[in-house]
Image 1: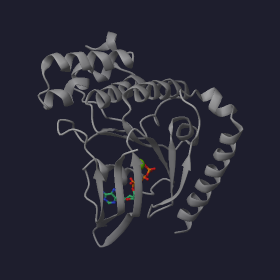
Image 2: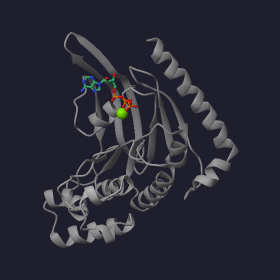
Image 3: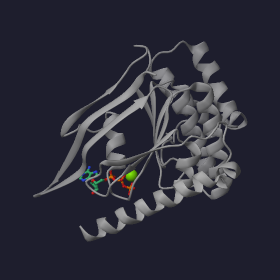
Image 4: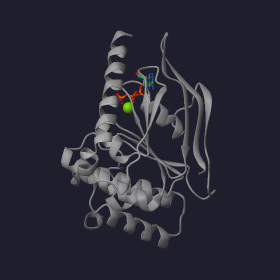
Length: 258
Ligand SMILES: Nc1ncnc2c1ncn2[C@@H]1O[C@H](COP(=O)(O)OP(=O)(O)OP(=O)(O)O)[C@@H](O)[C@H]1O
Ligand SMILES: [Mg+2]
């Protein structure tokens, strides 16, 4: 299996006036091409910082990372944010095709790919609407469709479903899995939900409290396609859930003492 993302000793220190904040420290990761990896960690441990570095939105203080490219034509990464990931003055369709148009992809391909992903996320009928006319779940569908339509080397997702109600979340998780299984993209996904991480991941990385580093790795050996009902009923996964829960509890407590 080919390595897609390599992260070596990545550290980020932020400077605010006279203070410095070490957000992440010595993060190491090796993610295989096509793998779905979730990162779980206490609030403030540097998950968003790590993703922003991989997205090129932030520079590391020390350390390096490499995203192995399969084609010079493709963008390196697309990012899906928790909220506000859509451009308010563009329609649903224009949002989804935005990245492709920016790269001057031929019009016919833009149209085909946009329609394909709009169909996949159930938004074909809403193509001409503006974000303000959409629900929160529909906006996240637009972000997901845009990210996949853009055909990046890797997908970075920062708690994309955190603001959704449970029902909408389950539906979007299954839609995401179905698109991912077909596209075989490498995904790095941040979540606070252990259930979500177990449902989605091939591997889960657990982070320590700030400065965040990866302290444990868990392989999720469940057949795919997966459904939440089956995952919940699996005894092995129930044990994993408790172990991860305990880890997070310990890290949250230790971050309060720092
Ligand atoms: N631009 C910035 N300037 C200064 N400090 C920052 C900046 N961005 C993040 N930080 C600090 O870095 C640390 C990690 O922040 P980050 O947002 O990466 O955490 P997180 O794990 O994503 O948290 P959450 O789970 O709450 O989203 C925090 O202490 C935060 O205050
Ligand atoms: Mg965050």
